[in-house]
Amino acid sequence: MSKELEAKKQESKDSNVNESLSKEEKRRKAKIRKKCESEQLIVSEMIELFCRKKHGSSKGEPCASCRELIDYAKLRSSKCPFMETKTFCANCKVHCYKPEMREKIREVMRYSGPRILFSHPLMATWHLITSKREKRRIAKEEQKKASTAKTT
Image 1 (tube, rainbow, N blue to C red):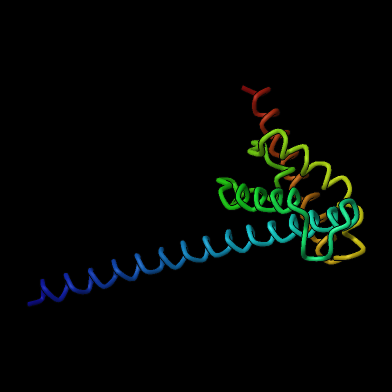
Image 2: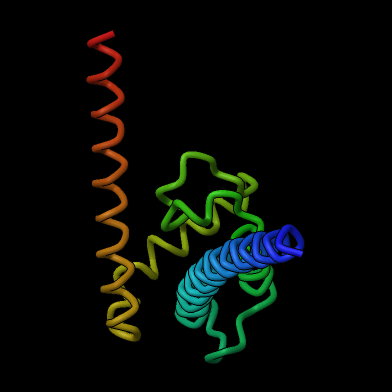
């Protein structure tokens, strides 16, 4: 009887460990999903701002080419394998956009980047701060790699 009781206790402990791991995994996935949705929102707002000013569309209704760019950006963001560790596409080492779409998004960012501050000041400020932090982090990592390469 005591062996059965011990086995049940061990089984209970193992299931608790598995539950906690799955909870951690769920939290991690929820955090990544939230980050992805946030990035998608920022990109959509920037493209819509660009479209309103450059193509004369009404708010919330971008033209066909800008709608295509929004859909493409959302697709790329949702499939990003680096979403957990990166902040924004501009800071990523791997650029997964097609060259033509990459050029379009660059044009949008050049135009909308400075102007988004007036329509969405909190979002723009958060984006700027996060981007600067990430660039500093990447630079430090590169310096660390360079210094370890010199010593070996």
